[in-house]
Amino acid sequence: MTTHATILPRAGILDIAPYKGGESSVPGANRVYKLSSNENPLGPSPKAVEAYRAASDTLASYPDGGATALRRAIADVHGIDAGRIVCGAGSDELIALLCRAYAGPGDEVLYSEHGFLMYAINARIAGAATVVAKETAYTASVDAMLAACTDATRLVFIANPNNPTGTLLPSAEIARLAEGIPPKALLVLDSAYAECVREPDYDAGEKLVDARDNVVMLRTFSKVYGLAALRLGWAYGPEHVVSVLNRVRGPFNVTAAALAAGEAAMRDRDWIEHCVITNEVWRGWLEKEITAAGLTVTPSHANFILVHCPAEGPHTAPALDAALRARGVIARRVDGYGLPNSLRITVGDEEACRAVAGAVRGFMAGVTA
Ligand SMILES: *Cc1c(COP(=O)(O)O)cnc(C)c1O
Image (cartoon, rainbow, N blue to C red; front, side, top):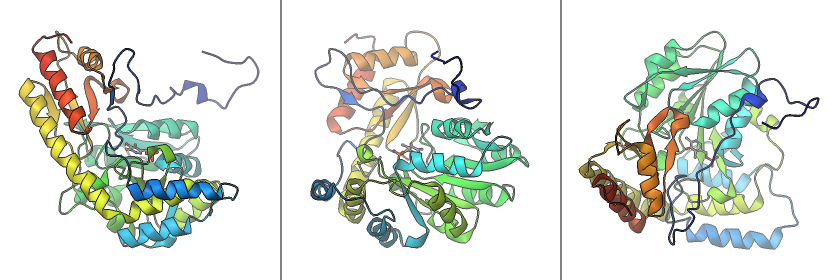
């Protein structure tokens, strides 16, 4: 490790394992299918690309620090109050700001066993202690999370659907969690994959936020919206949380290009619908193919699947990862999420899905690429 003898960061910072993004290249492969970061294989709305290009005419000007037009578009589409939306440089920035604002030394940040790694990383950066609640069948347990709450709990993070498991809790369970957490705790409902969910009574958080004063919802433009490169996300919460986020964020935390592209992407509902339906079709196809090949897949409500391998023998997760790579497919190892025998694979386009299925079949049949 590279440490300096006298110039050191605050206690705990050097204990944090840096977040590793999904890999994007395979040496020697001619076509690479990057299925490691849950990006949209169809890309963003063409209207978003056009708006991004148009933003190049005004690069000398600071962006609108209040993100007025983007918040208006989000509010129109979601039927929510624009005044209670805060935009960020990816939902990652909002996770970081919430941790910095609400948790510090002596406080606890709670999340579930296979929860998104950025919760732990940002809690530790803030100096807070992390508390992990056990899951059941790769699904967060509200009972376990409530049992893990203490007087020191300040933030409770839950992603619904969850990454990397793809599992979904009924919205009534999320409401029960919000109802049961201690009075000093804020529930952060991370709905990064909400667009993918087709359950009729699913609430991504708009209703729950409106009904309570202890819930904030996070959304991102990085997944179904296809704008991961621009770093854009938003939070919807009660006024008291919004006023805190607006104090701790940078005055120009979102770029003008991201604001312009995000607004156009938000208003292009046809494109999102097209992407969501395509994802649903190919996710179902991939789940069937991989199951037929002899591996287990956790049914997913998102734009990726979690594939489970035997812990021993020729068909382990590292062996499958290597076999996929040999055919140019980059999946995501999820050891860091406590899932050493699983791989997370983004639902790519048709060609990518066929490449995955072919590679898995070959791997299970013992054929080397
Ligand atoms: C991808 C992801 C995010 C981060 O999205 P950005 O907006 O790109 O920072 C947040 N939460 C979950 C669960 C994710 O999978």
